[in-house]
Length: 422
Image (cartoon, rainbow, N blue to C red; front, side):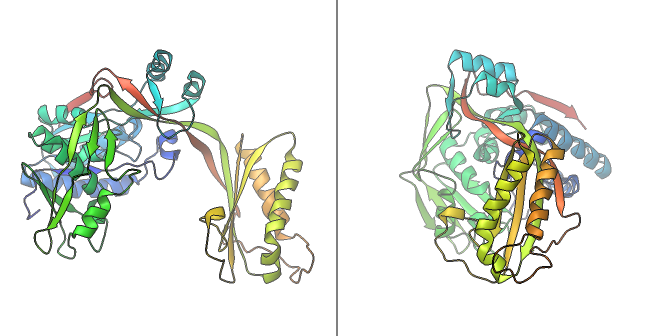
């Protein structure tokens, strides 16, 4: 805060943890964690007289997660005994609105690999869209001190305040893209603060911690982060051109960035993110130490799957084995030879009911535990279970149903802004 920021902006969301938080509406971070961190941010911002902006609240930016976060803000403000203006922005998309877009032919595939259909939307339990900077600027224009936004583009959350203040949108969005992961763009990288200072034709980045520095390498590297094309990036209503960017070390701690260009697209598209219930989930975690069992484990897992399928026929289940210590992370893409003398196994079952998922999971874990096989040495148990119960029910299992672009009439059409004096 001694660097005198004009705004505190936080990107709180991601699809990296998968569709569960979108489908369930449960927050990615605990209420305890959100409240603890928001209290620090709101206290610091209030003392400095600057706004706080949180985008993709709760992790997926659903209406339920926005409401949960704003409730925590109200509680914090009451505890601190301060007064401020709260704004919140929903990003939920009515299913009927998306179905109308399907019928109008104004939805395009993004990374789903399949068209979005009305049937898919009918099975979707939660649908949000990524807002750009415009709804957040509307909240700033309304005098908000704290803004809790639903699903938003990562860079737009950071870029909204400088754009509202009249900055070059291309520079602001490029700066936002680098800053959205905080001090990941510093060295040594960390999950704390980065400061961006925007000028007419460039911006300067530096860490908020004296334990780090920004370098040309660290900043340029994060410009490439999550980009299929390092020189071009699309966003709601715009296309970024980074082919002429340049990075310069201006002090030991600071890097100067120039050259971003942006063109407006003819039509304004937002990215839809939808989730649907795909069944119910049970898992079992086990360890293996016996070298003869480890040597035979591939065939034993295939046999266990076949036995489970036969056991529940005609019911069906999706069975996955994650064998850690042997291609557990990269699986068939792994290049390095396996090493180590222990294996970890996760038995992963998804079925149409929790009861069935649990039954299949236990059938496999129990069967493997006492499975006899050629050259067996240890007859007292093939698996070691670190947890009791060994078969753990995880509840509803979600999958992404929508990952598409939808044309809209205006940048703020789908993202209503609400205000409240606290």
